[in-house]
Structure formats: structure tokens, C-alpha cells
Length: 199
Image 1 (cartoon, rainbow, N blue to C red):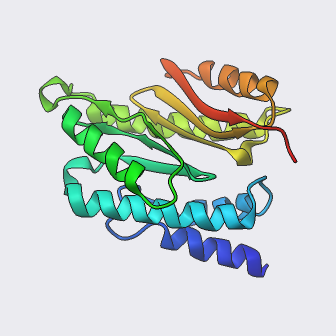
Image 2 (cartoon, rainbow, N blue to C red):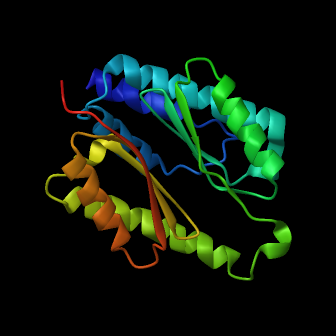
């Protein structure tokens, strides 16, 4: 229980007040419980939490609210950035911040560039759809036999789904991609998942 309590504290500290991602307290508890059964080591979990805190805080300090929709995911010190910005310059800057963060190994900069003039009236609906898609990904991967959901991370941006984390086999990754592709509203799936069997 002490390790779960520590994980809850660490995850809550990884989401500062100015962070871009709104966190439900129940999801923090859920994430902490999952962390207790996944294949990352406790040292990797601690390093990932610190790295995420550093990247989120630096992007916030240097780029402000202009990049309010940028999300940061970290798994075994690999980083995936997703979300939407208005200019290529903003995307590049966020990517450089992540690359320069102490301890970052590899950075997947998947931020989409959508100029404000190109934003349609459905922007709010798109956000709602992405939230629904992410919940469906969670539920379906959790239910999928042969997929260790605790090693995966996912984001949806305008229906473009991004998978991240670690798969224990190519077959597991293939199944996870197939599950996500089949979700209504998903237009594309990009997988930045490393394949490595359990030690």
C-alpha cells in the first residue's frame, strides 16, 4: 500500500497547476494502481515522472498558454508530444525543450500544426470526440486478450490516435493497433511503441 500511495503522490505532483492536461483525481488513483503492476521498474517510473514534470513545466514557462493543448507522455525516458499548435515554430520549440530535458532518451514530436484560420466550428466537438475515443481505447485495450494495457499510453488528436509505450511482442502491438483502428471516429493510428519481451 505504501508503494501505491507513493505512486499516487508522484503522479499528482507530475501535474502542476499550470499543466496542460486536466486530470481527474480518480484517474490518478487508477494510474497509480496500474503502475504497480506494469513492467517498468520503480526507478523507471520515478525517472519518467520527474522527466514529465520537467518537460511540462519548461514548456509552460517558455511557451505559455499558446500551447495549451500540448500533452506529454513519458515511458522509460522516451517522450511523446501530442496536441495541436498554430505554427511549425511552436512545434519545433516544444520538441527542442523535450530533447534538451535531462534524462530524455528519444523524443517523438507528434504535435499537429493547425493554423487558427484553418480551425473549423467543430473544434469543441472534436475535443469531446477525442475524449470519447481515448476512453474507448482504454476500455477496449483493457478487454483485449493478449494486450498488457498497463504498458501502453494513448492520445487522440482530432481522431488521429497515437499509441506509445512498450509491447511485449510484435503480435501484441499488431493486436493493439487493430483494436484502436476499429474504433468509430479514429481516422488514423500512429504507433510509437517499442517492442521488447519481458526480462
